[in-house]
Image 1: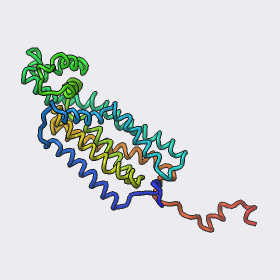
Image 2 (image 1 turned 45 degrees about the vertical axis):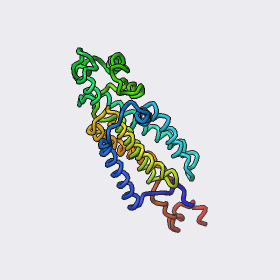
Image 3 (image 1 turned 30 degrees about the vertical axis):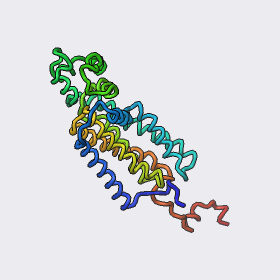
Length: 286
């Protein structure tokens, strides 16, 4: 039986990875085509729960579980498990927390694209006469200040079309829109795990990382437009960013883990008679 650590990537597997990533990107880009739904239903509440799985609070325990699945595969020496866990934890911290901070603090403010729900609330007068447009809302303070504004003005009376869970989500999401942070995180995670699966996993571990995680990422992307907190362009931008971040993260994982013998693709060559003689001590040759 071949252990997971002996698995490399053939041309066929590389083509499979390309197909999976292609389907992932097409699925994410196509997600804005989903029909609109009523935001005061149990379905909408379920979509909020789904979208929340891609925020930092829930991604942390999910990442811990994923790392545990990866390092407990058969054939991996015990000492290597510790080093691999440390490497994966560091890379995922950089890939997920790093890109979230960069996105929220630099990229989104640089583009300054308002969320579609904020535009809608301003145009319908829900934000009040002192905030006649989205630009005025974003100029009213930082994210926490804007949450306070929405918390005061988004009530059951002013937004009866929203369930309490969706309303709370709208109140929390007061940053700029482009690119979608949830989509970026989900696609980053999916690209990284799909590549890891084809390089080092087999059996149910490979199936889960290669197929289930990308499916989840597509669902997260779709949830952002269904909840009307992002446009299709926001999601596309998040998908492109996630593809780049996922590729970078995998390159870091590959470089980190490939320095150990159990991750080298090529088997060691058996020593020749001449090489054995060269390594023998003089006393052994007598």
